[in-house]
Amino acid sequence: MLKVSVKKIAGYLRWGVAGSFIVAAWGLGLTGVSNASGTYSAGQTATAEAAAYREECGACHVAYPSGLLPAASWTTIMTTLDEHFGENAEMTAESAAMISAYLTDNAGKAGRGVLKRIKGDAHLRITELPYFVRKHDEVPGRMVSGNKEVGSFSNCNACHQRAERGDFDEDSVRIPGYGRWDD
Ligand code: HEC
Ligand code: HEC
Image (cartoon, rainbow, N blue to C red; front, side, top):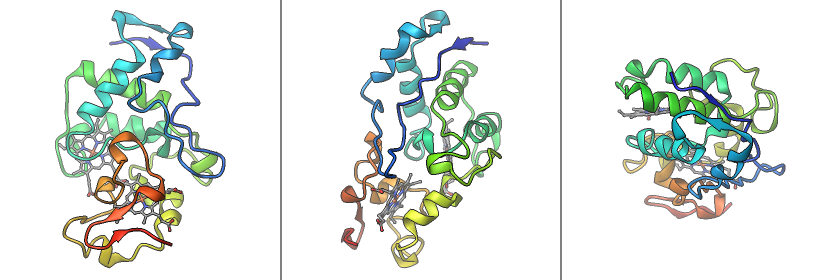
C-alpha cells in the first residue's frame, strides 16, 4: 500500500464563492507546490497523482472535477471499479492508490459550497446532485438525450469545450447541433 500523508491540498479545484468555477491546478502542475508540507512515499508527487487521474479516469469520459463529489463518493467509486456503471474500469493497485489519494485530497466538502445540501453519503453521480441539476435545468432534453452527439449529461466535454482543462465556465459551452449557449 502506498502511504500518502499529504496535508489537504484544499484550495485547488475549489469552486468559487459565486459558484463560478476556478479550476486552477488542473493540468497546470500546481499541485506540486504544496509538496513542502506533505510527504510522499516512493517519490510520488501530487502532480503524478493528478496525472494518473487524468490518464486513467479520462480514458472513457472526461476526468470529472474532483470537487463535485465528496470523499465518500470517490472512495466508493475507487473500491468498486470492477462494476463501474456497467463497465469494468479496474486498474493496477498502484494507479488506484495514487488516484484514490488524489481524489480524496481534492474532494468537495459535503455540506459546503457546491455540495451544500449533500450529507456526505456516497452519491455516485455528479449529474444527479443538486448543484449540477440546478446549473443544467434550462438545458432541454432534445439537446442532451435527444442529441446523438451528446447522449447524456455525463458526457461533459460534448458541450463544455474546455472540460479537458477543467474549465466548465458557461461561456465556453457549445452544444453540438445548437451552437453556443446564450441564456
Ligand atoms: C472503461 C471505461 C471507464 C473508465 C476507465 C472509467 N469510467 Fe467512469 N464511467 C464510465 C461509464 C460508462 C460511466 C457512465 C456514463 C453514463 O452514464 O453516460 C461512468 C461514469 C462515471 C461517473 C458518474 C458520472 C455522472 O453521471 O455523474 C463518475 C463519477 C466516474 N465515472 C468516475 C470515474 C473514475 C474516478 C475513474 C477512474 C478511476 C473512471 N470513472 C474510469 C466508464 C469508465
Ligand atoms: C448538453 C450539454 C451539456 C453537458 C453534457 C454538460 N453541461 Fe454543464 N452546462 C451546460 C450549459 C448550457 C451550461 C450553462 C447553463 C446556464 O447557465 O443556464 C452549463 C453549466 C455548467 C456549470 C456552471 C458553469 C458556470 O459558469 O456557472 C458547470 C459547473 C457544469 N456545467 C459542469 C458540467 C459537468 C461537470 C458536466 C459533466 C458531468 C456537464 N456540465 C455536462 C451544458 C452541458
